[in-house]
Image 1 (tube, helix red, strand yellow):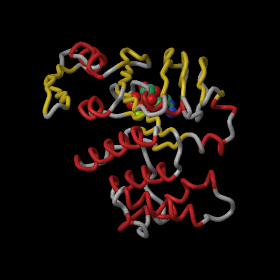
Image 2 (tube, protein in one colour; image 1 turned 90 degrees about the vertical axis):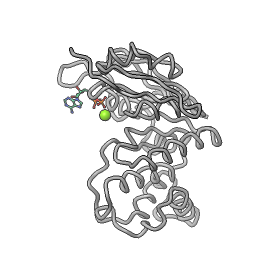
Image 3 (cartoon, helix red, strand yellow; image 1 turned 135 degrees about the vertical axis):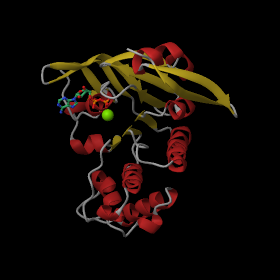
Image 4 (cartoon, helix red, strand yellow; image 1 turned 45 degrees about the horizontal axis):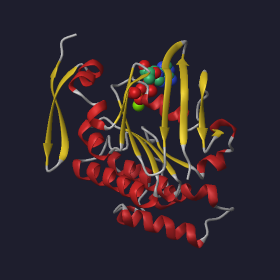
Length: 258
Ligand code: ADP
Ligand code: MG
């Protein structure tokens, strides 16, 4: 199985440092929850780890090889990506959009197995009834779920998701995180997920990485990474912690005057 490893990654955009020596790995079977305020550098880190941008220094290794030296096809067989902002949608069917996830394996046309995999994923995510609707005729949340389906159809050992629940209702947020946790546990998939909801992050992540102003300021099990202190320092918020039915609840209470 494949490990994704970022070491001492520095990235700058327009002369400004947006990632400052970030070291982070994603191993088979774990969910790494990437949290941090707006502009912390989560999407920049995610894109760098996918090999979509070139860091100023540091390196990103996928299965021990520099991710930027792998062909697009080789990479797509290892990592699936759910971007933060799926496009507004083209007049392409949901089914065909998910079939794009099979591109790294297909010849010129999809085979029977590709069609069966897409059918199965749509079924698993409860999207079968949308299969022949077009992407431009879906709600933002529905489109987001289709982007997850496309990534799952890719059947990769690693999945990287950038705020995959941002447009989802609470039921679908929960379903999505639970589904990813099951994929990690049952199939050994390694998951990196940037997410804002700290309770969901704490509940479903094996490990939390807290990013602030381009630096990883805390990393580890949720209760060590997400404390009243780290949340105050990064988000400027007083948070309260509780446990309901054995799961952590982290509630933002007061914005701290800066
Ligand atoms: P996050 O995903 O944590 O909200 P991003 O990684 O998107 O943060 O952005 C990190 C920082 O880099 C922010 O300050 C953002 O404004 C800046 N940034 C991101 N993309 C660009 C860009 N294309 N041009 C200029 N600045 C950018
Ligand atoms: Mg982002």
